[in-house]
Image 1 (cartoon, rainbow, N blue to C red):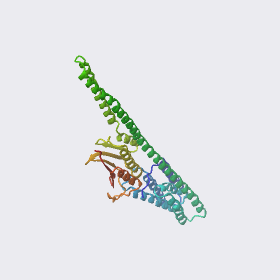
Image 2 (cartoon, rainbow, N blue to C red; image 1 turned 135 degrees about the horizontal axis):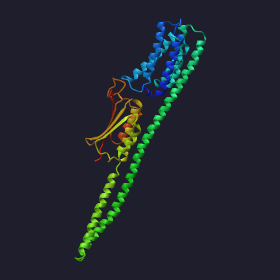
Image 3 (cartoon, rainbow, N blue to C red; image 1 turned 120 degrees about the vertical axis):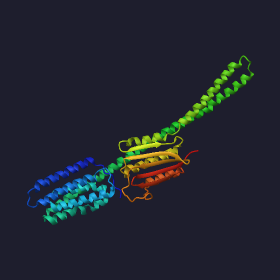
Image 4 (spheres, rainbow, N blue to C red; image 1 turned 90 degrees about the horizontal axis):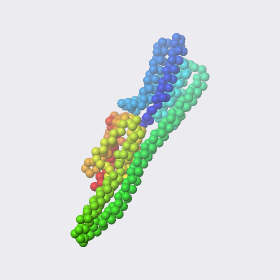
Length: 385
């Protein structure tokens, strides 16, 4: 199970303030109470403190060493603290902590499963409370009421998570659109430059060549006093022809696609979220539109996977040539949450399969590996000769 990323700083502050208010109310109501001894009072305050710390750790965006199991263990610890608190304190509104706990649950299990299990984990603390404190029948009215609060917290956080997902997908689509638009504009300009260069070469170059030939004939048949002027015109025609050919070559050269420019358009909106380093050690302006588009989409998919499924803060793209092949080496520093994950133990979803299909279309290959240092993608395709 991959845990969704928790980005809830405002809600985190509000929840911790709520926990502290409930703890302070407990302290005020139970101080000097005959129903709760000093030992129990200290244990109650300790439960609130541990719950606050646990909630703060669970909702931190920074990764843990063992990311998945650490957060699951903290969530389990929080629920155990709620059960313990229900057995130590006779105050029913401590169930607010269970509402806060419920709000985090959609990030750790599918929503439908949490919804189906909600009666079970909502009723268990009240069963403990009733068994310890011998409460009257109104206990189950409170239990039912707080269960609806739990459901409300579940639904609201699931809606928030879906909104985050939709926003993230919209941002990804916008970044990809900008990068592809840049490539399409470059391709359009390249096509127009190529057409103009071809027209200049075929028309102006053809006429200048014809003019040079006629001037050569005229120079041979003209009288001696006319030859210097004709030879001067011939020299100018030849210079013009050389300039035209040089201009045509320049137009074709500068009309090539610039993949790096498209990559900058792709990564620029992410500069405040992740550090992207692009190191190009070879000339890639000779790429065709199909090659540039497929490589851009592969890099986009790798970047999307990093943003969605890891907590990396660095993303590196290295482009180089080796053995008549163009290599694109893509790495992030979002280490695997499983220390036992081997190089070949990569579960391929639709995204990675799509990368393989795009590289296959270019007669290239794609290789993936995952380790404690991060995810690694290596793309290779034959270079044009």
